[in-house]
Length: 368
Length: 222
Image 1: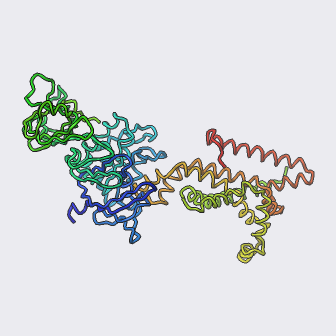
Image 2: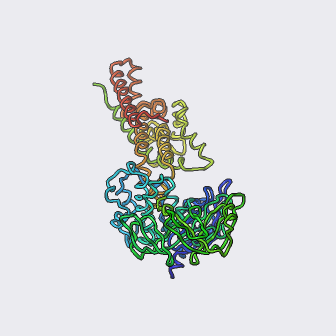
Image 3: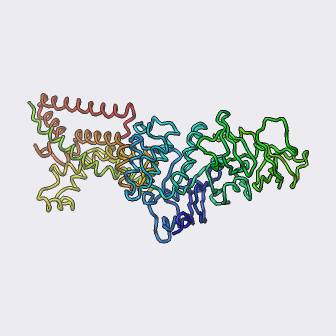
């Protein structure tokens, strides 16, 4: 079986609650991290719970990698504990009667002995749990609880990892603390992952592909870079600022200045120090449209460190607002900028014009 | 020295009843805590009946239901050679029903307060339903189990009307402590009645003190 077949998720399911109807008919090839994105109440968590087997109201068929987990017509419904799924809850749900080590052993001792690819020691080191092992789970901070919860889930040796808004219950500082652990997941453990969130910045930071859910239906799927930059996507219930994802290469770290220089097709950018990335590593930067300023001539004598030259390709006015979204092609990659319509008119911005895009270094701050 | 036979008999009856109640009441409380069945209110009402009915009513029906003429009583007579009424076994069966709410209600409250969250977590960590019950629900309901067992035991020690109706007053067989006190008073033997009564009073206070301390001022919801 090829890798793509092994990671394909086939969803033909309905979940009916009073006043809410989730209906999904979609094959998703789960490569890396798939973001399940949409406003609150769109059915993201319900869909995730149906995949895990927690929604007894789910009907239809559900297959993963050739295994059938749900086939209502034939009375098949594999119970949650027999699906090779790891589920991380928003509220961690650690067992309060066990300490941290006890929580990790709970899943470790129940995993199939013959297929333990992820070792206990590896999880303890990947999530820096050594110093927490003897702690009572009620004494842990929110971020520590989620680290234990993710580690505990990985020890079940899941074939599919489901993360249900793991950052939503954390305050801003804790989110930044846990993000590096989430970012390392795909590379370190290589488990296909579905990540549910309504936060654009989390999607931009973590997701390779994005599935957009609105009112219980999938309304768009595609690579994160095109979905989040609003190509072909209008969410009526949740307007969000377009985000451009740039894949750049690390050139050098300027440690004394706490900066990292990166290259994008020969043009250079300076961003806050990216700890943990080596020279020539590829890293992902996300730029919110509102953080981009356009100039028609190369600016002089300003503090902005990052100036990218490109060609303006498109101006899309946002209905009923002061703004328009402008696309600038930076060596073929569309960079989105949100400008006032007034500024566009005054500068006479039109498709085909050469422009300079200015981006403040601070807007690359990788904390959330 | 008063005859301590009734005391040992009461302790034996309460102990055996509590063990059976743990076995019967736990699955019943678990079912009640999670079900949406339309029979749930009816089952809950039946479970709570002993709280409101006079023990003589329960005892009267048990006397009929367990008597040698009834299907249950005649079956028991055929299998064991003994009648159920006026026997220790009959007392155990009656006591199980009589003390059922004291086992089921604390357990049900405890299970409901845990909710489905920890069970889902256990399921996602490869624990089957039975495994999850014993490895997560039982440890998290420890206080509920202790409260339920202590209350069931103590309530069975204190029963009088049901025992008198079903078991009568046979020394060594059905003369439990409450019956013995009644008999001492009837025969104006106040000295022995005092010893047994004061003993029960102190024991009952100790049990309730223990349960309330366990709940740290919480309300006894039975």
